Length: 379
Image (tube, rainbow, N blue to C red; front, side, top):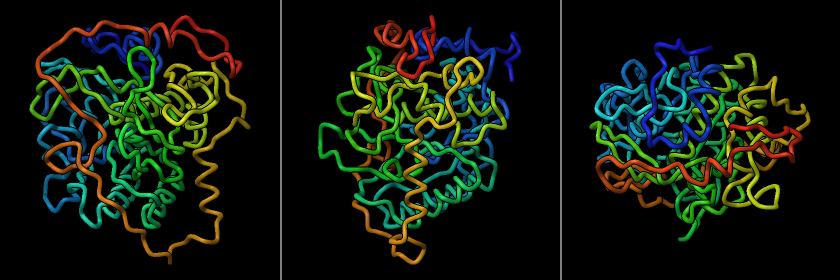
């Protein structure tokens, strides 16, 4: 669906990723995410923030409160920031605009990471969001674990059975312990790493075999739950949120397209980095919004690789894992915010700053020829 011309929001000048993807001229005329609900499983979302006016639906509070997810209890407003990246509608003091400004946000509030049943609550959130109309679930959160607990896998299977696409941050500890993280490492989840404006892997993005794609994640602006603008947000959380917004655009433009096909298209139309088909930081490449969204202009063969769903199908068909298996224990991950909500974004700096659109525009001007998609003058 198209956005009426008079209602089209005007992005901030420093929202360089929107300019890079040519969203105002090339993407929004085709799709703005209308009709698509994106669940945000995080620390809650401030529904009263002017930048999200009319975008936030009543959700679920899994932390024992009655907020219905519409209050952001995180000190730095992580969930609100992710919601604004996805579906910000301008307004307020920041005028921040999301990639899919007509999408709806369904907030699911998590308790702080480190609770023994944290992954079980994510599983409950996935079930609930699936039952309440979400077509995309964004999980910009992380907790260290070498295996995906069966209860969480069962929830992922439930969502996939109901045609829901799940996206998660890959993690921000690539130069540290680099331990796998839930839920990104779980089969069936699109795990997203972060790249810079220069289209280079962020040094701290996780280096793991579960990384599927990459998207802009650093040198970015963000809005917190008080409407304060931070000009230097960084992390794979941002990259996951932009990928979830891309899924919303694709699904709005192609309402009958199955989730499997959506993910297949994201992978097939991504821009490869380096001379390999896949690498542990950026997966199969950087998300190209128009390529994924416009099936008519950028066709993808029906037999194109789909490793995300192949991995899930392999798990589903396996005989050594099932509902009777006890959930594996997980090692709590130190929270990225002092509030204790486990996230994959780090926010630094205050005040406004004008960011110059740099190498990402140059680096992403063409669609990779390796997919036979030809070249394009814009993303």
